[in-house]
Image (cartoon, rainbow, N blue to C red):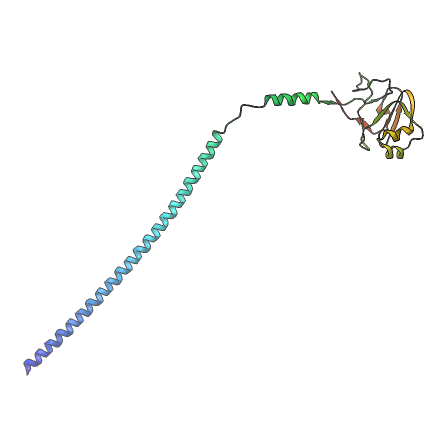
Length: 212
């Protein structure tokens, strides 16, 4: 009987101890597996971060390289930009010639005169009647009718309404040998001999320039 009890206790102890040991071993293994999974995840995250940082660094370096290349190309364009030595000399010459040909000169002083007075560029030495007069008031060119003079009945409205139609103006023109009738849209004057325009202060006429 005692032997049977001992055998039973040994069997229970054996089973209990083995079960406890297996349970402890299983718990240890589970903890080790959890730790390994955690470490693996941490390594994966660390690798992902490192890879992300490398990609960013590579992009930044590529941008820097592109910027450096563009700067080098820009510098090359500045250095090697072709300079044309074939300037249009003939064009410049022709332009200069045309400028000299179309150079304009003004009378100084401006003279008025009858048909017997020479016309052209007037100066204090070469006294010529200006034939390029222009009015600064009405902005009309001044017309000249040689060997004529204006009738004393002329008025502002007559010239205002009829300039520059000769067929309408001739109704107030009278023949005068050696005379010259001047008129714009707002003023008129009859001259027989050479006279300085400055003496006729009512006339707002200036020299419209002559081709030299």
